Length: 157
Image (cartoon, rainbow, N blue to C red; front, side, top):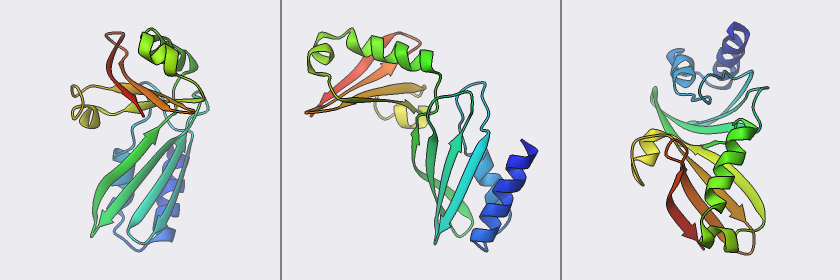
C-alpha cells in the first residue's frame, strides 16, 4: 500500500503544481469495496480535473473517479464503481431478474455498479446500493438493495 501511495503522490505532483494535501484528499476520497484495497491506482490531471482509475486484483472490474480541484478543495464530481466480487454481481443480477418487468425486457451487455450512500440517498436511503443495467435495444436498469434483497427502483428507456 505504501508503494501505491508513493506512486499516487508522484503522479499527482508531477501532473500539477497544487498543494501536496490534494494527494491525501484523493486517497481519503477513494471508496474500494468493503474489505478490499486497491492494488493499482492511476491518476491523470488535466487542468482542474483529476481522473483516477483504481483496481484490485481480487475484484472484477475497475473503479473510476473524476475529481475537480477547486483551489485546493477536492470535489468528487462523478464515479463509476465496478470493482466488485463476482458472486455479489451475480446476486445483484439474480435479484433484478426476479422482477417480471426486468426479466422480459433485459437483454444486451450487463453492467453492475456500486452506488455510494450519499448518492443513493437521492433515490432511496443513504446506504450502499447496486445498479444492474442491461444495455441492449432498451436500457433496462434496476436499483438493488442487496441487504434487503429487493429492487428499490426500475428504469426502462
